[in-house]
Length: 375
Image (tube, rainbow, N blue to C red):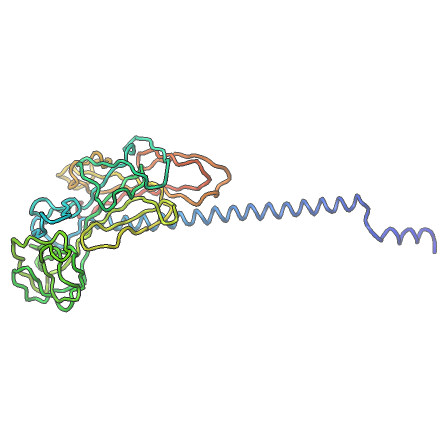
């Protein structure tokens, strides 16, 4: 074997140290590139996923509130709310004019009532210090007291509102109802004892508001007194109007919407029924809703359309509110964006500064007309 052939074979047996180092460096560069692409894709996916959750929460909460506000003040086909006779006992425990929208012995529907968080009016600046229900101050222009059921449940610096309306019950009268304090139904009424209900005549000319006091399995709607746990009960100083099977039965609902602390510790949008006969308590609707600011469209009392938008602190007569403007601030989980930052958002004229963190945030804004208050 020649010397040249011998050394040629030996040169194919391995790599030199320099070649090995070059190969390792190239492999490391390729690995780092793959890792960088993976981390970038993972970060993009996480951000997209969180933004998707925010948009889903925004769509749901906005559409839900829009529907509720749009139907606020719905009391069937009654020609005039003053034709609805109030049988509730004004001397009964926990009789709340505010929740029922009642003035004296007349039923005057107040579709929407709201409260303004301290330092969150038009042109104000508010910095979020906590997302815990740790107390705060709320007020409105009519000096209404916050309903006891939600005292201490709201996050500081957030507005909240209450919506009053009726919902048609799947109950039909039996067509043989004299003007006493009991109405016969076609089968079991299906309306729980304690529920506030009102009945509208078939010709839409009159109605009666009272608390149903017998069991849902009974074939009657009875306006009994305050005994047996019924609160506030009924005064029974006047008889019911006469009704036939063309009459319509509604349950009266008074519902608060506010920002509170969710089960997971995240801020969330809540609803809570305030009317008697409903014990469902607070219901969490959407997680990650950090703040809510509300403006109210006021008419001039002559033309039933919004002439101006003001905060709750500037509303003296809630009967002039014909629309509502909602601004909600939504946030993602933490560690979504690259660097911690503190941002300020315009929520319907209020500058709200969020806490410094790595969360993505989105503002949802909508204006809703109250159908029963507009021209």
